[in-house]
Image 1 (cartoon, rainbow, N blue to C red):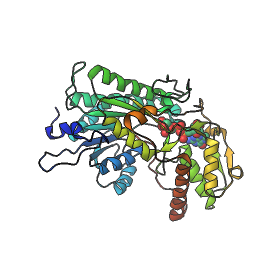
Image 2: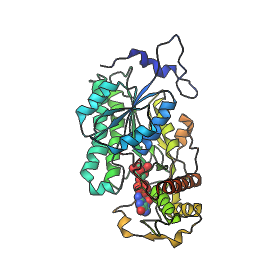
Image 3: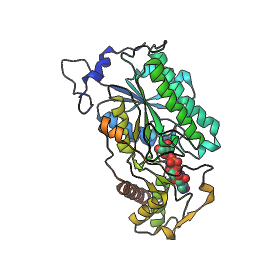
Image 4: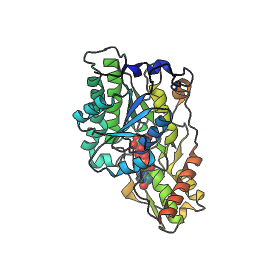
Length: 374
Ligand code: GDD
């Protein structure tokens, strides 16, 4: 069912060293690759869209709902991106979107991704974060005309699934690599494990180029205010500017491997540019506690966190993931990927950005990009 043979040879026409598309030659048909991103209004979607546009991709974003307020925000940032309606809960809309866009690559970043919400709306989390992966894969399978097992994948649509370190949960070893067993600790983590194994299954069953990036926590000034890094950077900025006196947090002893989201979207594209599909752990290999995060953030603004942070049981989770740390050596060796931004630089960048944001807006943070939002 796919058309557009002029774009099918795009992968053999990339630079073998950097994996980026070769510049188009005048004598050749256009080689522009076309990407469809679900979750484009979220933090990762916006960074990925910017990155792919810079690489020369034609980028489409799937957006849901009638008057999605994040669309206006996205339009201001990324005028070049084309939008198409669709919903991870609606199989027909996904098939129609893939048919219309005829993508070379599909990045499934959409999810209900705020872990505490997955206890409050466990069924919806399963539908969107878990079964949503099935629906996207099915849309690709149907539109590619793959009906039998192990159909050859010529001219196939490449698929990226946003898997997560939350799948390791109560991790059995540290650091975690692609072979580490999963022990998810939340309905969100369980739903992501389903999507992860389903992606592997479609690769093995149908010969699809389908891969998962097992991404550790990745942050930026576009992060939703409910996640701890942004909650802290916004809290510090509010306290520094005199809008608040306290910041209420949950478990300060939890540790995460925090990197910069802008670095992580490069890895997504690299995974789809390989000759063979495979899954990769993406993280920095360095872990810090929430308490260290808080300390660095307050010090960036010349404050002492002990004067302002209050622990509040309302933010303690029913089951916690105590400590995560990535072993990203496979990504380093095979993708030549490394994070460029370290932890302290990331935290101070976020605090500085929120100080500017609040100073410019009179203390109103406005509608952020939110999570990798569905
Ligand atoms: N959100 C939040 N708010 N977390 C807090 C707070 C608080 O007030 N206080 C302490 N924490 C602790 C949490 O208990 C958790 O251990 C840690 O801070 C990080 O929480 P989040 O920033 O909410 O992120 P996450 O690790 O649960 O999940 C994020 O990263 C995953 C891995 O990339 C999300 O983005 C997931 O969708 C993603 O899969």
